[in-house]
Image (tube, rainbow over all chains, first blue to last red):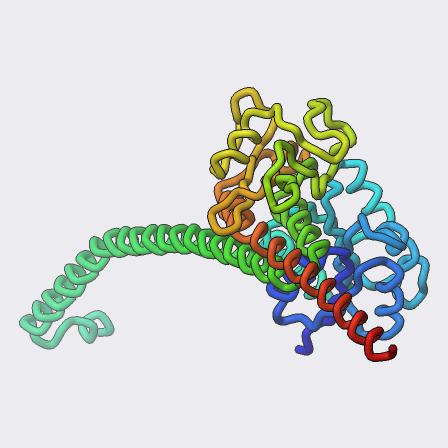
Length: 125
Length: 243
C-alpha cells in the first residue's frame, strides 16, 4: 500500500526535524505557517493528513483549520492539532473547528503515532 | 435359536474378549486420569506465555522510551548545530525548552561583558518566554542583577540544579558553559499545566543544553562577528579599488 502523504505545519524547525525522524514511512510536506500550508495543499493534491501547530506567525493554526474545513476539496483531510495550548477550552475549540485529534506538546511518540496510524488506516479518514 | 447363535463359540474366546475389554477400560481410565494433569500443564504453559508477554510489553515500552529519549537528544543536538545564525541558535534553545521540556515560562541569561571581555556583575536576558506575569522582579529591564539564590549559585559554580530549590521559584537552573567557563544560564520557572513535573529523561535534555547550547551560540556569535568584519573589509577593499 502506498504510504500516505502528511503535511506538517509548525513554525518550529526542531519539530519538523522530529517529525522527519518519527514518520520515516510517510512522505512529508513542510510548511511553517498557515498561509504557506494553504499553498502546499494546493500544490500537493494527494495530502491525506495534516499535523498542525496553533501558535504560528502570519496565519495561526485555527485560522488555517477553518480555511481547510471551508474548502470543498480539502475539508475531508483529517487534521491533528499538536500544540502547547493544553487547556480543555483549547481542546474543545480545536475539536469544534473540525480537528480529528488533539495532542499536547511535549508529546510521547507512541501517543502521536497511535493517532496517526488510526487516522491513516481508516479509509473513511 | 437366535440366542444360541449369539453365544460365543468357545468359552476361552469369551474370556479373552472380556480381558481385552477390561484392558481397554483400564487404559481409558488411565487416560481420563491423565486428562486433568494435561489441562494443568496447559494452564501452566498459558501462565508462562502470559508472563512472557507482559515482560515483553514492559521491555517494548522501555525501548520506546529509550528511542524517544535518544531521538529528542539527537534532534536537539542536530538543530543546535545546524546553523551559524545566533538568533536561530537562540530560537532553537527556546524551542527545546517549549516543545521538548514543556516550559511555559523561562529566561535565557548571559553574563554581560565589558570592554576587553571582562565580566560584569549582571546578566543580559537574551530570550524570555511567558515572563509577563512574573512577580519576582528579578528579571526586569532586560537584565538579571541577582537575587534568586539558585540562579546565582548556578551562574557561579556551573552546577545544574533541578527543583524544588530552597528560596527559589525556579524549577531548573541550567548552566551554559563554553570550555568549562559559565557564560550564562537557562532558568525554567514554570511548566505547562498539562506537564506536571520534569521527568528523569528531561535531565538528559537539560544536560545537553548545558553542554551544547552555549558552545553553539558562542560559535554562531564568533562567526557572525567575523563575517561582519570580513564584509566590512571587502567593501573597503572594493572602495579603494574603485578610487
